[in-house]
Length: 142
Image (cartoon, rainbow, N blue to C red; front, side, top):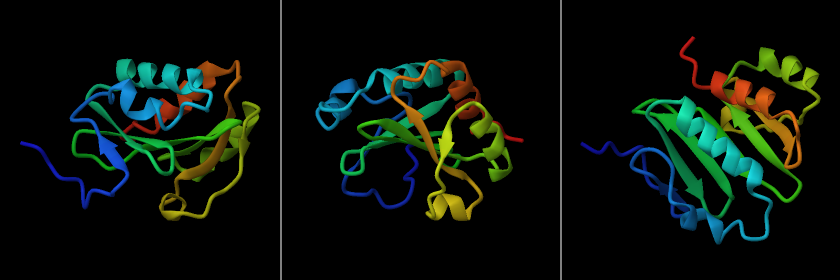
């Protein structure tokens, strides 16, 4: 049985489960670096059982959740970096900054629910293990 996750926005495309087909987002992101987001997508698929992906063609972001749970992660693809909003307590923000990443707070719905918002990750970063550590933490149930 397919569960409707609220009213479907005009520009949002959701997978049934797993990742969307690449052709769905590639045209929107054809002038953007995508190697890092592709790596992240594949690692999330491998590490998070039951994960599902969505993509907003207007705002250029990927969203992730598992099962009927709430959204856990948004990755906005920008020209120079990825801007990430993740469902972990803001008390971890200083730890993310210790990994040499910038966090520029974004006042949005997610931040009002104590998410870390505005995490900036350059497309050419070498610190992929730290990125995945924090992304996977967003799916912890603790």
